Image 1: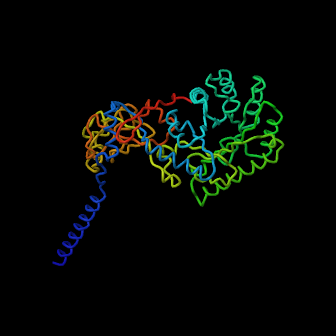
Image 2 (image 1 turned 60 degrees about the vertical axis):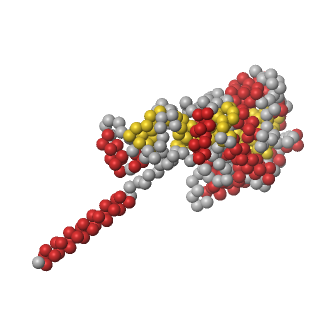
Image 3 (image 1 turned 90 degrees about the horizontal axis):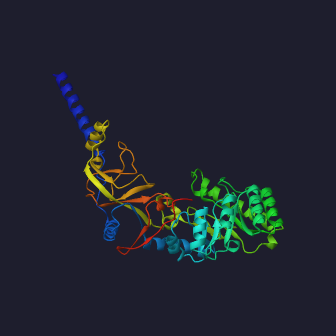
Length: 432
């Protein structure tokens, strides 16, 4: 009798444990993450269809958000007596740069390639240009050999970036060969270690080379410091890197001020920052100018505390081609059935026009790629619960992770404002 009672108790305990584990297992099942488009994205989708732009992937910019971001960036620069230079590779459209520039008067751009330099000089001849990376002397020679007829004057409006005595000697020889003055900005290494001058003796020798050549005109320094917010923040590493970058910049400016070149130099450009770091500069350091580009449109790689008051202003919109129950490809069909049974968010397949961009789906919510299917640049699969209520020809929206290169993949940018597509802005050629 006692043995039977003990057996019954064990059965009850086992049944209870099984029920508890089953309940825990059910509680661990993923919840439905899906929902239809929110109001903003539904409005943009309607605007794209009304404008006849819903048949293929399209890059959309929200004009109100863009202007608000630009005003905040410019306000920071003005409040701290810093000039603002727009990074054109991150805003690769003349009309986009014009729009942002309306909030940042002064027409200063940072340019990174010969094709974009030629484009800006031809189409926006009032622009003051600083090269953002050292170009081969052959690129400089090609530009100078075919000057634009627009009135752009490289002897006043263009600063060539050099990063070493060797590069400087090449530009000196180019100036001599053409008998043409060149403005020289020296790249300094403030901690990124990608290039530029780091030690005082090298800088002194380069300053002396500029002083001795009448056709070279010293224009300033450029010290890019975005690394200070991208390195792992271990034990205050970011703050230390920022302090060291400021100190290095100041130390090299002090070398300049102590050199014989300084008395003959006019107003100088001391450029620094980038979108991740411009808010760290308050005008108290040696720099008098910050470079900003991506912060204006805020792709997701720039979601940082320093930029928390800015809003995403660009999306990729693309039509849905097919909607069906999710069925994994042959060979992993059993895994697909298990995924469908376990996770409601694996039940519906949406094949879109294009895909595999440096971007992530954001609307409607609850869409994701499938590890069982892989990525596709032709017809990307996005899986979801079905509560997104998408049908063929409906739109899906992605948020770019970065702006440079990505914004140039879709042709003209569709400009959204107050429920309508109000303009289309051509983008730079996809090169550079």
